[in-house]
Each structure stands twice: as structure tokens, then as C-alpha cells.
Image (cartoon, rainbow, N blue to C red):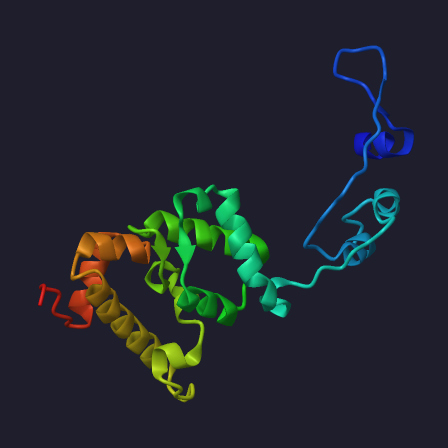
Length: 203
């Protein structure tokens, strides 16, 4: 109600004050919800909707405009001041990002870039430091182009075993580093290594 009043009158009053303050602002609102459905369900005020919906811009989800990913990645690097540290993203990373479906949209992309930059020991962000779901979102990455003709439990087991082996190779069999990249505890990594009978001693 207070927001609607500010939009309609261009004035607001501070708590405890007796005088209105006039403001000259332009409001830009964004949402990932379907407001028309929210109106029908009485979950959003109709009067506020029509006050805000003066010049609507429909922005497709990230999965439908993946050509924007390189530009967004560059923006996030600048936003978090990573360009000042000469942090770069490899072509393999951009390829992996383009194959992912991004259910969390742009915010998820930002989180992925920030996380990878934190985990990367050097200035180059590599695929190894992307979340598992992003790294292996493409069928061919994990199964070499095989079709999904296996039971779920078998496919899951093959994925976990392959992932652990590659992770150990990339981290030179450093369990602490491997668990950090995977986002799990060292105890869990040891448990999975034992489960799949994987030799984790440094070669």
C-alpha cells in the first residue's frame, strides 16, 4: 500500500515525521514470476500491477539466449573486481556454460563464476572448478555420446565413479582439494572411494 501511494503521489513520509517528502524517481521492477497468473490467484495487487506495468519488457530466460553468456561472464568478472586480478575464463569453460540449461537463470551464472574464481588457484578459471552439474550437463562429456538406455542407479553409479576418478587425477590425488572442488566433506569422498573401490593413493 505504501509503495502504491509513493507511485501515485510521488511523496512519502519518514517514520515519526509529520511532513511529506516529494521524490522524482523512475521505478524499474523485475520479477521471474508470472504476474498475470498471480493476479488471477489473488497473490498480487491488481492496482499495483497496472501502476508498474507501464512499459513491460519481456526478457527470455538465459537458456534461450546463450549467446549472451560470454558478455555476462565478462560483466560478472568486472563486478567482482576479478578483471583487476587478470582472472580469465577459458574457452572450455564458456563451452560448458553454453551447454547448461541454467534453471537458476542469470543469478545462478553469477554464483558459478564467483565460486569458480574463488576455487581456482591461478588466474585462469578452468572447467574443473565448475559445479558438477555444469561440467557434465552435456551427454557426451560423461558417456562419450551414449544414449540413456541404462537404469538410473547404474547411470548414477557410473557417473560418480567417472567423476571421482577424473577429480583425483586433476587434483593429484589430494583428497582435501578434491572434496573442496566437489563441495562435499572429505569423509564423504573417502566413503565414495571405498564404495567404488577406487585407489586414491598418489600414482
